[in-house]
Each structure stands twice: as C-alpha cells, then as structure tokens.
Image (cartoon, rainbow, N blue to C red; front, side, top):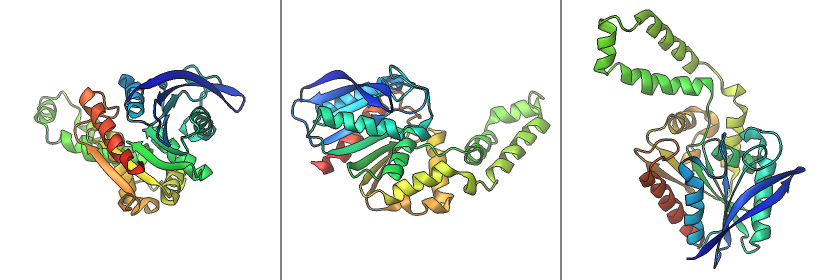
Length: 279
C-alpha cells in the first residue's frame, strides 16, 4: 500500500515537539505511536524507527515517531523516561488530529520507552490505548544488574579456557577478581523491592491494562534477561506475563537494538502479525 511521510509539530506543556507521520492511503482505525527512549531521536538506532514506521504504514497503520522534549528537534529540557507521560499524550492527540479515523492507539517502545509506555498507562488509564508493543523493557536496578552479571557473565567466565590461562599465568589478579564477584553477589542479594518505585508502577500499568500486549525479547541482551529475572522473582509481577492477552516473541540471536536487518525484519513481522487481530 502506498503511504506518505510528513513532518508535523505539536505542543506539549508550552514546548514544541516534532515528529514524522507515516500515513497510508487507506488508513486503518488503529494508529501506532512510537515512543522514543534513551538518548536518541525519532530515527532510532540503525534507523529502526524510520524503517518500522514505513513498514507499518505500508500495511495500513498510520504511525507517528517523534522527539520527546529536550531531544532531537523538540524544545525544552531533557528528561528521563519517568517524566514523558505528557509527551506521549500530546503525540497521541497529534496523531488523531492528523488521522481522525485512528480511534484506537497502540504504543510501541524499546527499552526505557517500553517502561514509559507502561507508566503512561498506569498514570492515565487512557481508554484510547488498545495495545502495547514492548521490546526489552527496562527494569534495571543495581540488584537486578548484579544478578544478571553473576549468572551470565561471571558464570560463563569460569567455563572459558582463556580465563584459566590468565589466572594460571598471573595475568589475572585472583584477589581482585574474587572481590568483584563478592561485590556483585552482595548487590544481587540486596533487598531492594521497597525502593523500586518505577518497576512497581510498571507492574500496576501491566496488571490493570485491559488491552493486548506484545512482548518482544532479544536473546542476546542483558536488559531482556534482567526483565525476565525480575518479573519472575518480584511479587508485584507474579503471573503477569502468563495472562491470556500477552503474546511473547523471542528473537534468539538479537542484540538489544536489533542491529541487523534480519533482526529488524523479525521485529516488523512480529508486530504486523500481532496487529492483524485488530483488523
């Protein structure tokens, strides 16, 4: 299907946000808002957001990718993912103003943008949101990172011949290495549940969301591993990934940002297959 791209701008709390709207000739009533997280712009790593928005629009879904306040072309001060709910709301309004037929909205986010999408749902209970597409959601804390490093980094090092060669030839300080491992073990076992505010809010957003969720996880990514570890152990997340409206897609060899064309195509195909349920 033919589609066209246009630059748009819209207001958010006395600042101006800029984005690119990909609009199909015959638009579905489901629109996609790509939430951008981290220190990046609406282009995305490896131009992923550009390519994804075009693929979604070619399939009939109007798609908006935009810069939050303080990033890219948008004005204002930089802010982290916990403070972009107004930006997401403004982008949804802008998409629906440009495409009035898009009465149902799906939020798409990678890493801390996935966390921001859940926080938006938790804060607003916006009835326009019918779906969430979340990739490698961010739940990081010192404890969760240490647990992953102990399990996947230090554990693997003990199985590597190079590690033992360095140790036996004196190129590795055993006392320093042991101290590092003990430090990580201490962090991994720390009781941090009561202080992890945003993860708790994400869980509430997930639990109370009435729509459908597509969870896409990279197989070669610490952030994805942290998410699985945390949601399996935190009481607030217990059972949430097993709900009937949750679909999980695993891209086994992919890294965090889906840096190869093959992995980006896998993401696009997973999203398009999942979106067919709204036809």
